[in-house]
Length: 268
Ligand code: 2M8
Ligand code: MG
Ligand code: MG
Image (cartoon, rainbow, N blue to C red):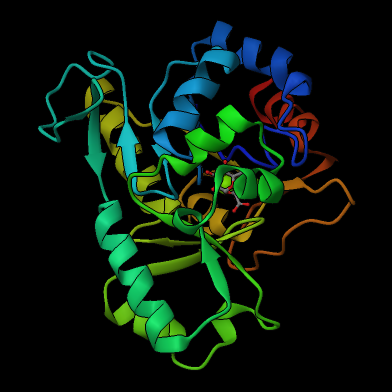
C-alpha cells in the first residue's frame, strides 16, 4: 500500500487539529512499513512541523499539489528536480510571486470582496483558522499558492467569467474548507500520480494506493487512487463527489474515521 492523506478535517480534527484518535493506526502502518504521504493545502513549513509530531518521514505533497518533497536518499534514483531547504523537490505549480501578481490582477479586474493570506496579519489568520500564533506563521510562509477568504454572497465559481479568466492565464482556483486557494496548473491528483510513479520506478513493482480526504479539493487525489476514502465531517455530513467510483465513506469523523478506514482496508 501507499497511503495518500489530506490533513485538515481528515487526519487532523477540523477545529482542534488533534490527531490522537489516529495514533494507533499510524503506528500500525509504521510497523508494516507502509508509507503515509500527506497531500495537503498546507505549506512545506507546516508539514515539516507536523510530520515530526505524527512520526512519519515519507514524501509529502504541499499547497494542493504544487510540489512534492522527499528526504535525501528516500529514492535512490536521481530525479534532477533540485532542492529547497535541504529537501529534493519536484515543483508542479507556480512560484508565489507569480501567484501573487496574478491575484492582484484578478482583484483589479473583478473587484471581488476577497482577502488573501498575503494581506492578512498573523492574528487575522489565527482568527480564520484557529491556529496558534507559531502555526499561523508557518501557514503564511507559502511558496506556491494564495489562500483567500471570500465575503461574496455567491460561490466564486459562479461569478461570470472568473474561472475562465483564471484558467486562460494558467492558474486554478480550488475550494478547501475555510478558504479558496489560487494555485498554478496543478492539483493533488497529478502530484499523487507523479509520486506513485516514483515509487513504482524505484521498487520495480506496482502498489495498491489509498487516498483519504474530506473536501472538494481532494477530488483529484481520490480519483487517482485504487481505494478512495471520504472522511465524514463532525456534523455527520460528507462531501458529495459523484465523479468517483468505489468510494468508502467513513462512519466516524476526522482522525477516528481515518483509523476506521485503515483498519478496514489494511487490516489490524
Ligand atoms: C488552509 O487550508 C485549509 C485546508 O483545506 C482550508 O482551505 O480550509 C491553508 O492555508 C493551510 O495552510 C492552513 O494550515 C489551513 C488552516 O486551517 O488552512
Ligand atoms: Mg481537508
Ligand atoms: Mg486540505
